[in-house]
Image (cartoon, rainbow, N blue to C red; front, side):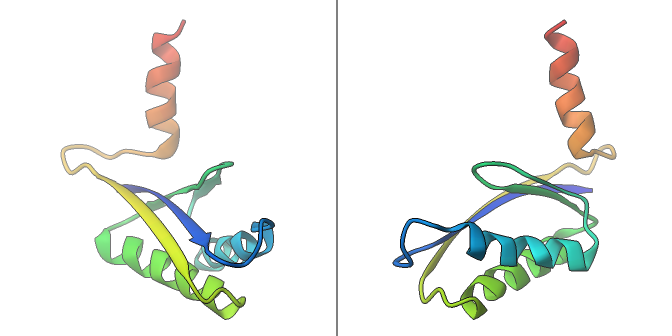
Length: 99
């Protein structure tokens, strides 16, 4: 499992970006990937690199279709191959250490 964090930043469209981001999130819903929307980006799980990049590309294109003429997309990948990982497990590991 690959954990992906990405953010799509439309440039030159004003200060209200939520409509553009909503179009990107619709892609995650349509593809039925498990995700977590945060204030600064979105985290999702992909079965492999191919799926990860396909989802990001589709979300990127959705923001273009929504009217953005320029976009900056930031991507972080956690590709761990020695054991299965999930968003919840990563958060739980830190939370347990805070107790």
